[in-house]
View 1 (cartoon, rainbow, N blue to C red):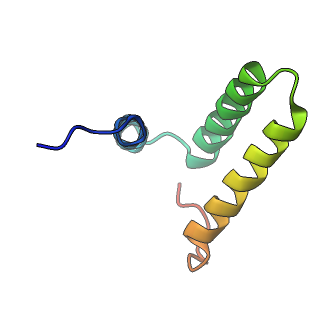
View 2 (cartoon, rainbow, N blue to C red):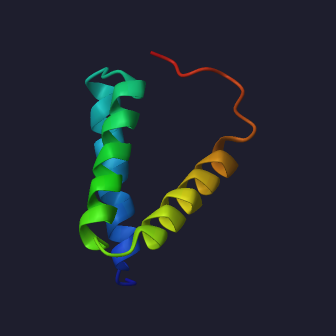
Length: 78
């Protein structure tokens, strides 16, 4: 059995959290907001003297998110 990378381990944790949010019928927009705030806070705390790095990280995350939903024209389902 192949040992999971840290990225794969993190992906499992995120997927489990997303399933838990759905099971509890939490508002997807609220969860999205909280996750974005958490991610930005982590990025700023880990790069306090490098706002350019944080800006690049946010831009890359936005680009990846848009690419992953580019064909999804439906609104968020509550």
